[in-house]
Length: 144
Image (cartoon, rainbow, N blue to C red; front, side, top):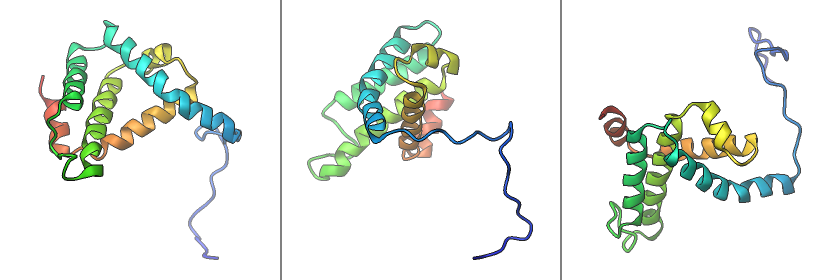
């Protein structure tokens, strides 16, 4: 085993989170199943909430129109799996963009599920947003 002479293992303290208790597979599976309906309800509530900027709502509306339209940047007819992937990325980026513009306390207030479920959804959306080209992100985030 390799030795690291200048490294000390951190001890649990106020600046480190204690490990979470292990949850059953059934509890995790239930959380994953409920994430979709909870996310849809959260987006609906955010779209109706006056504390959310109009610009962020319009970005989401534009993304939803793109996802619903038959026109795609990557046609699914020629690239079956990748063709649907661009719709998922646009949706993930737009919802992530909407949620990043909202105070975390407001998100927690409007989320219908557990705190773990909200963290999971936010992590997945952030991960999906990582695949969106930087030029598109800069365009959306810089205008307005």
